[in-house]
Amino acid sequence: MNLAELPLLEGQGWLQIGEVLLAFVLSSLVGLERQLRGKSAGLRTQALVGTASALMLLVSKYGFFDVLAPGSVVLDPSRVAAQIVTGVGFLGAGLILTRRGVVRGLTTAAAVWLTAAVGMAAGAGLWLLALVVTALYFVSVFGYTAIIGALRGQHATTVAIEVVYADGRGVLRELMATATRHGWRIERLVPGEETEGGTVTVVIELATQAGHAGVIEKLAAVDGVRAVREAPDEDD
Figure 1 (cartoon, helix red, strand yellow):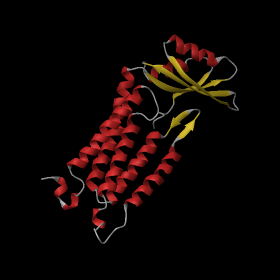
Figure 2 (cartoon, one colour; figure 1 turned 90 degrees about the vertical axis):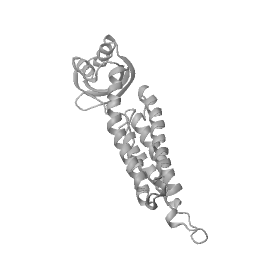
Figure 3 (cartoon, rainbow, N blue to C red; figure 1 turned 120 degrees about the vertical axis):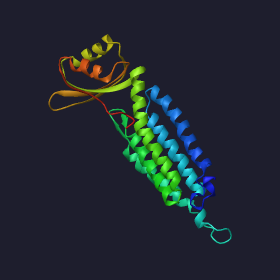
Figure 4 (cartoon, rainbow, N blue to C red; figure 1 turned 120 degrees about the horizontal axis):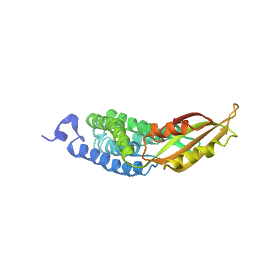
């Protein structure tokens, strides 16, 4: 039996589920390319945004059959869904932060957008699509996180390292020399402001095939370095 033939599943047949899955797969491919090139809005973010967009469109197409009646009810309830999309877009923009040139919060903003889409689908009675997209969310944030970790171990990727060091002792020059000696390519250097304690924070983006722990260990061994840590993913 076709799912769409059931009264409670109108507009939620295999065709609609296939459309959501297609959006998930295709947007994941785009995200994979961005992830491999070390760009912002990588695998998880692109997958979430593409899947949420598909669900929002399906809500507009199929979510209002139960309140529309030809010749009697002529209102356009999909306008409410459109306003939700706009409002949540502003909310997501507020979650994205740029700190010392590093973009953070993209995946969180995309997750909020997807949550809004799931809520729209549930409220419109498209509960099966809401369940499918919620499952795809967990595939994206957990499954893709493991894939990203594996890709980082096999390919040269960009890792952002935050270093706190004593100012005025040539530490930054030694950090750059250490990176060069180990074959790490410096993609970007984002210096921070000097603190009252005479230390400076800098974010160094390195293209490396080495494990992150090895990078941190080598940089932490430089004389004058106070602290080293991996900066949060720009796609978080």
